Image 1 (cartoon, rainbow, N blue to C red):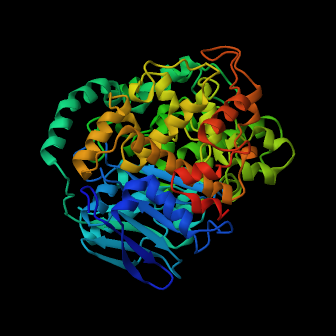
Image 2: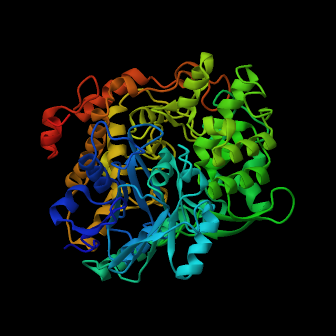
Length: 616
């Protein structure tokens, strides 16, 4: 077995209580690498076109990668994969923190949970041993309480992955939370509801095993040589967190406001990273093996928003703040705290509330519809009231908890005009009118609108990758040569999600050559750039084939009408609209897909996926 891997995963069936170990071959590991790749392969093999996302046949796949539980910077991440109840198609979310390394310390590369328990349970995984335990005593508790209560039972050294009340109630915006008050979220695509459907409250890991590597001395030397550069290049992110980018994004026309229709806002300075540092910041949070430390620890000592825990990241500020025009940083921090406790995605939650605020403004909703809540732009009280209702799955919040696509369908009339999503997933807090490649990336991302699935805008802000032909920072508003560029970016990010590296390390100066070097020192594999990128391409295509089997094609690779037809008239992206049609055709051609966006047989054959062509 190559270094970096335990060589086995756990299979837990909650219906009949079976717990088994499954070995992973070196050939399989080299083809799919870890995290996102292995998760996608298992999801494809274990499901079919008719799999119900909230049915017992839909597996929950928790997967690490070869870099997890090593000293490689920013490798403290893991991937969670399942069919999404929010979008109905491929679903995945990744999280930082300590849980992924904790699972590897127990001797497993991943856990697949199948079936459905008749009552609330949690899974306890220790070194070489796993048990299903009764969770009645923590069912109904929020995620912070769940973490604390499980530590009272099993000791403070355990690491917990859990859902809150939202997941229990099958809210389709439900997230999976980690590390208690540090609030590390696998937030997107509603996978917390899948856990809730299985009556699975938590997975607890407790182990102390080390992960063997092929050449520890060279790995140590490589990391030591690069670490100072990473720290220097990401110093602002360490000082101010991801909120450091709020003002810069605003100047580029990238920061979202008023459900994507506003282009200027006097409140943006009030919600910035420096403002947080000057007011409520108390410390920094580092994920396992991280040297950047972008996590925020904040405290509001008194008043209606008193709290202590994880501070709001850029996405939370953009969604609960900019999207709703709330410029009170304490209210945003408290809203993020509520989302963490209930276990709901801050991005989709803020988007759903902003969507409802616009419907209220236009008279498509009344106070009678919204439980008496007056959904006025800029009202922190209204924003927080709706966070509570979505998290509890109550009243109008239950409808918003279905996501904007389904909520618009049920409200009817003109509501769908204002539901901003791709494939049912609400847009993250980056405007694709500011980066044309991001528009293409949102459209073709397998899980729906996602800024980090391809993260192409990194290469249009600061990052270069000469070994992939990206010799200089790209023009963010260019309209040509997007297809191959997007393909390379998506394939690279699939590899990072499979190795388990934080995308922010790219801002630190890490290149694919460093990743391949670390992979060699960890596993012993000497992958050249072609094999490395082909593995990423293979992962891209198996995710695509999962969605093709679900009935998706070119018709689904689109953007909201507001993004395609309503340019900003001022600001850093004034007048620009992403030329999606041409970019999409370029992308399909680069991929070796047909004009409907379906991988050609020869493409699948080249990638070792020929059997998938006949299983559609």
